Length: 86
Image (cartoon, rainbow, N blue to C red; front, top):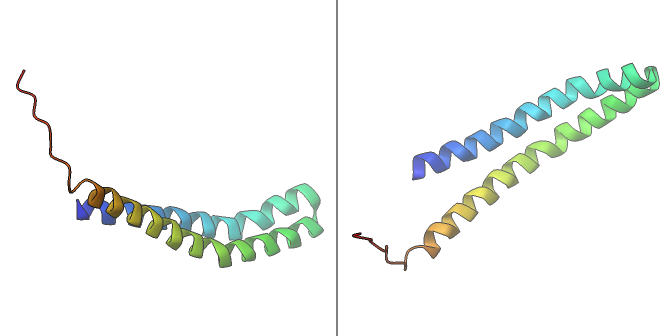
């Protein structure tokens, strides 16, 4: 259980981290293609802002998922499994 929990949290973190890196590169490119030089600088601003905010979001999202899983397991502690013999 704990191994899969750690794997899922790592997956969420890496997913958001790669999106952050791609935003820094792709936002200026998309801005330049659509609006020229002004769009490029807007894209740089957007990419840098995203680079500052997205890692925090990734960490908080992974932690939230982890805490939800722990809460689910704690909630299941008092339950008795039902066995069907038919």
